Length: 166
Image 1 (cartoon, rainbow, N blue to C red):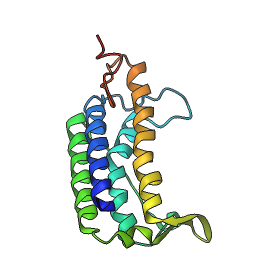
Image 2: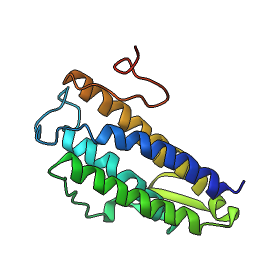
Image 3: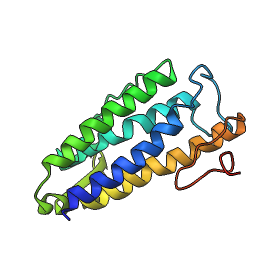
Image 4: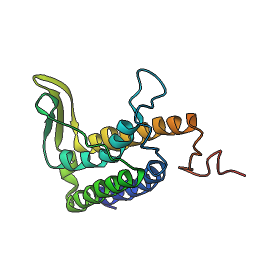
């Protein structure tokens, strides 16, 4: 199996799990966060929905300089819009991975920097697994805590959740 095919399969599985979680987010709770150091729930949910887009800029470049970014997130107003955003980002990410048919493309080095300060430099396949895939799962776990604290039943990710188990 080619590397891109394996990544696509994993992304589709995790994307389906993420979609279930995002569909439950009460986007009208604009000021909710469980702790003063936590992100606001709509911002966290939007970040999760956008993370698959990182696949495109990882595969399409050799570095990202955070000091030159002018990122202004557009936060969806509803869970339906949030899921639609996630679906769009997933579709684009899968298309990028489908186009990456040469496994050697994943071995190219990619750098994250803040101006002259290099945060890390590693092969694209490691960036995809750590800074994208694991990053999605990490924040999805945070979101599950937010939802749990709001008494919103949590869907199963890798089998039934406590809310689904009988």
